[in-house]
Every structure is written in C-alpha cells, then in structure tokens.
Length: 437
Image 1 (cartoon, helix red, strand yellow):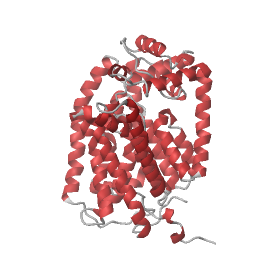
Image 2: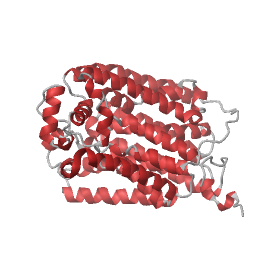
Image 3: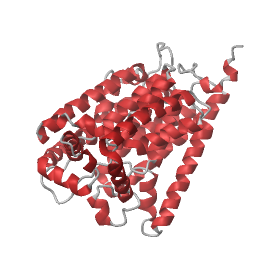
Image 4: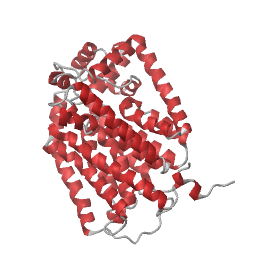
C-alpha cells in the first residue's frame, strides 16, 4: 500500500530543501538584501586583491600549503611512498624540490591522494602551483554548475550573485592562494548532495568516500548517516572507503601505515607546546570549530585532559542533536546538517576547510531568503545566520588569534536549521523534497 505524505515525514521539505519545480516568484529583494549582495562580495574581493600580493611573495619563498602536496606527489612518483609519512624524508623532499626551509609542512592525508598530485610533480614547483590554481578554479566553476537550480532565487537578486559568492568567499580564496585541496572536497560534497536529490544513495555514499583525504571532516558525516540508518548510502561509503584504503595501504605498506599513525598522534594529542603547533602548522586557536573555541577559552585555565573531555562532550551533544532532529527531514537536508555538524566537531579544521560550508550557505540562503522581510520567522533566522556565516571568515583578517570565534556562526546556523526541522514537520509550508526516502 502506498504511504501518504503524513506517514513519511522525512519527505517533507524544510527551509533548506530545494523545490522540485521553480515557479515564478513575485518576491522582490528588500533594499538591504540588495545592498548586502553588493557590499559583502565587494569587501571580500578587496581583501583578496591585497591577499594575492602576500600569496605571491609566499610562493617565492615556498611558504604555501601546496608545498606538501607537491612533495608528496614527487615522493610517490619517485618510488619513496613508504617514507611518505616520515618527517625527515618529507623535509628533505620539500627542501630539494621546492625551497629549503627549516621545517616541513607534513603531508597528513591518506596516501591515495598523493597519486593525484604525482603528475603535477612532473612540472617545476611554481608551474605546478599555477596549474593546480587553474584546476581549482575549474572545480569551483563545476561545483557551481552542478548546484544549478539550487541558486536560482539568489540569482534573482542579481544574476551573478551565487557565482560571485562561490569565488569571493574568503576560505575559497585562501584555498586558492595556498594551493589547498579543500575545493576538491567541496566538489565531492556537492556531487553527493545532488545524488541524494536524485534518490541515488549508493552513489552519494561513494562520492562522499572520495573525500576521505580529509577523513576528519568526512567520517562524522558518514557516522550521522549510519545513525540515521541510511544503509544504501553507508554501503556506498564503505565500498568507496575500502577502495581508497586499499590503494593507500598498497602504496605505503604496513611500516608506512604505522608511521602515519605516529604522525597523526603528533598532530593531535602531541601538540603540547607552541613550538610544536607552529612546526606542524596546526595551532588550535586558529581553528573555527569546537576544538578551537574550547582551546581559545580554556587553554590558560584547564589542563589538556579537561580540554579534550570538553571537546568530546560537546561533540557528542552536537551529534545527538543532529541525529534526533535531523532524522525528521529529507536526505539532502541531512547532508547539509551533517556538513555543518562535521565542521564543528572535526578535530582539525582551518580557514581553507571552511570552503565546504559554501554548500549549506548557498542552499539555505537560496531557499530561505524569500522570507525576508516579513515571512515566517524560522526561515528569516536561517537566512540571517547563513549571511553571518558567509561573513564570519573576515575575523581572520582582523583577529586571527581569535578566529576560533567564527565557530559560533556555524553553531548559530546549525541551531536555526535544527529548530526549523520539527516545526516544518508539524506545519509543512514547502513542497515535497525531490530526494527519496
């Protein structure tokens, strides 16, 4: 017997879920929305123009994050993959093929990713950096194109608004300047989101697993879908994850895997001093997540043990809330909720990693902005908090030592989205979601 909509509340739409059809909307953007649509991207663009001057100088000195990815690609291509996680070997490779420095930027991703950068290592470092920059720009354009109709309302404010937002978002600019791979992770998440919109859960899980090069971000997302008992997505993730883990183990062997574990320990519980944090490039105070927030607030008053207990406790609260409330909404909404939650509880999360927040920011803004100025209050809150989250990375320009406070804007948007889920379940005001149950 066919179930009715009332019997399947997870098919109900929320403020985040795109509409299956796009009717003509009579809504006219208020003057302040149009002003912000011009002003915020213009401010971001101004900071980026000046930032590129510093990025070029850093490139000349080999002080960009692409250094580690390039050297890892060279080590794998030259047959040194088993030493990929040996700090001394990484330092030697980076000094030989990039620019000599006293400390290495450790390559701490699963080794399968280094295969992607092996072809770039055939070029000189600066040429490879330029090639990867062009590649990242193409990936951004592709991500925006895949989202398609998820930004039609935003583009009703200005035809170019959603595209400009993708390219001027400050974390995106940092990822481009540093030669980081966070934009690749954004593409994996966008692909997974659209697969869920089309009811292809196994494919969504497989695409999600391709982002395991940043496993600290991807694993919490996968965990939430397990808690939500989405077994097809979990099966796709497990199949893709087994493949990338198998490739990684073949590359580095058992000894290399042990070295990798030791490196991860040094990058987490081993960060016992400011010198270690600087040497390994992972200062917690610069992280816009719960770890950074708690570290920034209590580093001078609590022991490391208590700080870790607080991090684990608050992370568990976030997961529990997302599990209980997120189960009432559509699959694509759950992915957006999971991305927000993962960015908070991820143990290692820097400004360029915030690139993935473009997905929940764009989709939630697109489907909530029409509530301004006099629509329903829950969607107004989502639109406002999404705007705040889009603007929050500016803290990095003014108070970088307190950038962990940007995590509060992630908390605010996640709170607003979770608050909307039960109210939408009781009083649906949106059409049915396109994704299947």
